[in-house]
Length: 80
Image (cartoon, rainbow, N blue to C red):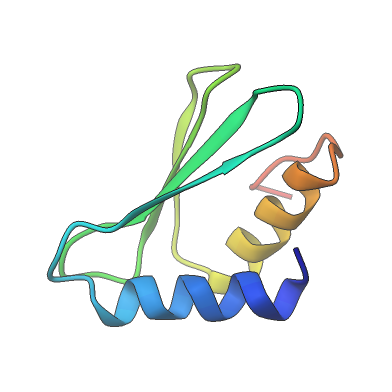
């Protein structure tokens, strides 16, 4: 997916943050990344299936980078 497409999706999720919207991105290997915007905020909760890690992030740009890199199978950290 392209950066702009993912960013628009995340912006839409935050716009409707009064309802529960979850989006899952899955690699061809079956690993998945689940994203949701926490209710009443612009904070994203990101869960990765392979590590069971759950992290939170307030930046749409960093979250978009993380998703695009995940789909490209790059190994990055949300905190970088």
